Image (spheres, rainbow, N blue to C red):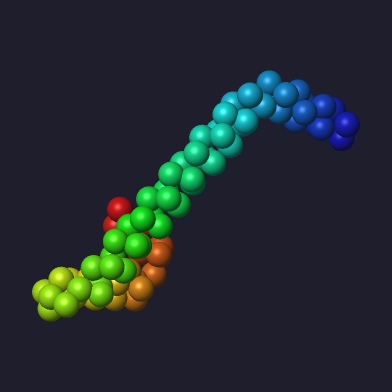
Length: 78
């Protein structure tokens, strides 16, 4: 039992730099995607306030699609 844990921690210490690099890259990507999504949401919001019926209809369709579609389905499509 102890030998198994010893092997686990030996492998972990060898791979730790890769794990730390992966965590850093994941955090960077999450920050970039969060900022981009927030800015895109602001743009869609202001476009939905437009007085032009075509722009308002397009943004409404866009919002209805993403609100009404389960996230897992959108991820499969992408």
